[in-house]
Image 1 (cartoon, helix red, strand yellow):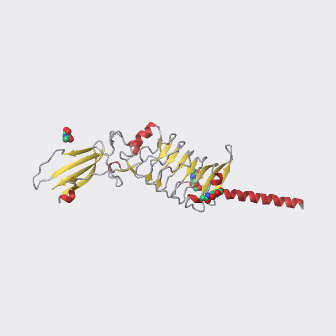
Image 2 (image 1 turned 180 degrees about the horizontal axis):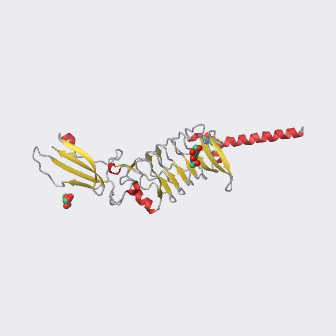
Image 3 (image 1 turned 60 degrees about the vertical axis):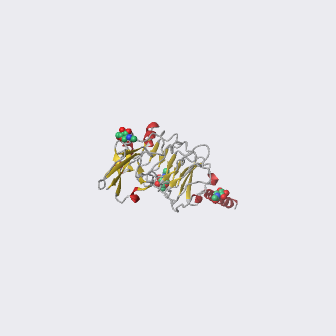
Length: 303
Ligand SMILES: *[C@@H]1O[C@H](CO)[C@@H](O)[C@H](O)[C@H]1NC(C)=O
Ligand SMILES: *[C@@H]1O[C@H](CO)[C@@H](O)[C@H](O)[C@H]1NC(C)=O
Ligand SMILES: *[C@@H]1O[C@H](CO)[C@@H](O)[C@H](O)[C@H]1NC(C)=O
């Protein structure tokens, strides 16, 4: 009788133990414990059977100091902003979700990341301070997204970065992006999977790392005023034309691209009006032109 009772207690205790652990692990996740360092380490994988729609479904509060790996790959997340600081997190996989941007201070709650994977999302925009605080990051995957450009300074907090993958993005290889070439060289970052340019037209499908600064591309030194690109007008003096004759004017602006999202563009004005509204026979064409520089040439022909 005593023995039977004891058995019952052991079974009850086991059931209670499993239940209490299950409470810690979020419902749609699997939490695996490994005892490596001083305390317990948890590896958390979410969304294998039931997909995660928002990070609120992943409440890691009860063991936030002990999670070393978090795998949220292949879910429906369009934001990653954890509520609690995950101080021990070293590996974060948010690939194959619905992220459309990396926002300011996106990773501030995971300051000890070494490996970050945001590949295969729909990321179009990366805030210049998206990576603030990630001073231990070594590997970064941003491949297979919709990134067009990356602002200079974006990777500045990543002091220990060893490799980066930005391949399979519609990169616009103009002067706003090409600072990366110097940066990769300077701190010997491994640029994985050979990213290619999508635009401008003359660099389409060219390997980013094969572009030669000063030969294929001339960029205005950052010390000069970035608000005003270098422009050349030809002919650069007043023209006299007789009625019926045609005149062609070229305006060349180094480092302006035809990217639709770029705010830079060339317009032809006459008396502060769009020249096309003023004259009937003005034809305006733009064209990429490789004259030892990345530029767009606008031609205005008056017939
Ligand atoms: C997360 O879980 C903790 C207890 O583990 C609880 O106190 C807290 O309210 C939960 N947060 C949310 C947002 O559900
Ligand atoms: C995350 O989980 C998925 C699905 O189980 C797996 O394919 C992927 O390799 C995991 N990522 C990491 C970094 O382990
Ligand atoms: C006009 O162009 C010529 C030849 O390219 C150049 O020498 C001259 O300085 C230019 N004049 C002005 C006012 O920019």
